[in-house]
Length: 500
Image (cartoon, rainbow, N blue to C red; front, side, top):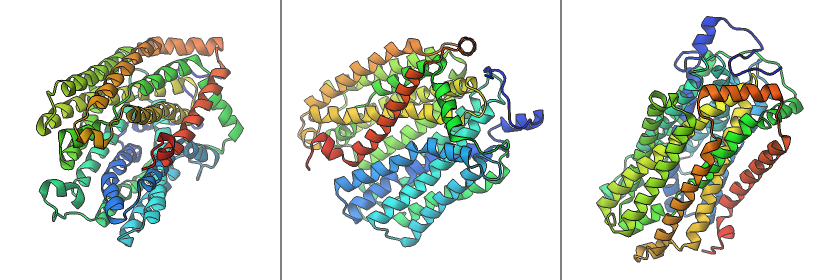
């Protein structure tokens, strides 16, 4: 039996009071879920830049070794669906996600403490321990996503997705604080305050990373989750395919994935700012920190303002703003409005905030839409939420790869930019404007209001309009995107034909 967006069934009925508590992201029964999103955002940022400095300056790694590190770090993100399946097939004490989330946080914490205890870990120690730590964090994140999807069934239809939006706010807040802490690593601020500046060592950064999962893990004991029995693998695969074959799922997902692929960034922007404009690494780090702060503000604004807007209108607005910002950057660079240090820092910094608003608003919009469409597929659809989000992320990953290819074709190398040869950057920036604007052609496939989307879902469920060819194609494309993204990141020189 199918469920409508308005009604769902549960393995174990709960009281009305418990349902209200579970739908509150700040209640003790849900706090660990909300904070886990913050932990993942924090860990993505807190040691990323310091570790890059450490591996290059202290360990003397090659560019290829750095590519391998970046590739392996993306693997756990790709495995979110696997973590979700594991909890479904092997529930711990009849709980799919609660205890697995706790285990993931503990593993992450232990790995960072281990790195801190070593003091000066080798490249291989950094590589594999960070991989384990990131796997633990994203295992916890996958469980948190599943629990949020379950709790969305207890929200009113008009407010469905607010729990998820709150989690996105906490995630971006965590990323912002991670950036702030990373500023205190000695090498990061040495370019601004002097070569002898020393505030936090790499061991201190690992301890800072370990603190986040250590503080959140105990709250997992208070999480309320429905009991369940072990699921059958084939039945769960069939359930996912049934969901993806629905028109109310594949039409918006294909459109949003295409938009994520088309709205791409100039990968040479950092080179242009650092080598062309001459801004310092400290200033560039401040811009990145402002970007994380902007993401935090964007998600908060979305929840208060844009949550009740039509989905299609919000999505169209994000594409228009992204296109306008890229055109503004092109004009500023081409007319020399922003070609020196401070004008570059301020002008492109502001444009960067607007671009981030467009990007994170689109993410918030598709996150809410996915919650609603997964509710239409039935109860316990957390895995479906994970795989649909992953498909859109795969579009972004392929966009990044295309951007790297474009950067080689347009010759936007550090050497060219530092010598004042900006023609390649102009050409690539103009291409970003043209391609991003094409994203508007996908907007008509985005639902309008919640009510019209609910009516579309109900109609699809009544008339059995599933298309399994589309579902199989989506799954094949997603699998290819994952494999190719990891391979490209690990062997970037091979794919780009760069022997340096």
